[in-house]
Length: 113
Image 1 (cartoon, rainbow, N blue to C red):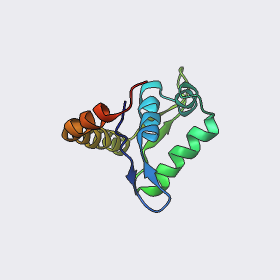
Image 2: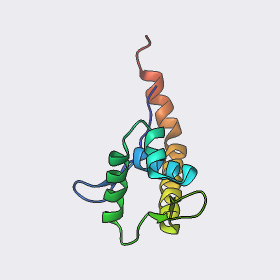
Image 3: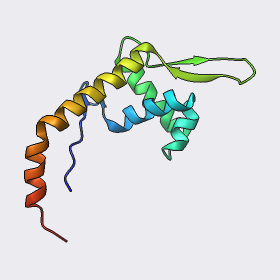
Image 4: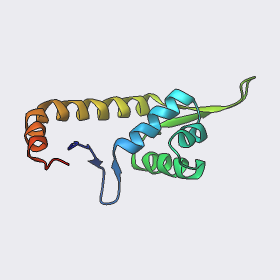
């Protein structure tokens, strides 16, 4: 089955795609870069590097660390990070909806088995 994957190029070597967006979503869900990375089968270092790449590309950060308290510290998405995820998902949804007939035609043309 064919699949449409949306990648938004931000420059010659920088892009935002489904992997980075999923990482941000998991940071929002789990409240931790390390937990988000582990849930995706990647090291903390790899997860942090990906988030750092995103942060360096935009004027505003996508995550904010918070410290202390009984539960300890953690990480959450900033308003900008939430907006980035929402905008990416909206673009992907519109692209999928508008290309459905074409994707179905390609799927019907694939060899079976």
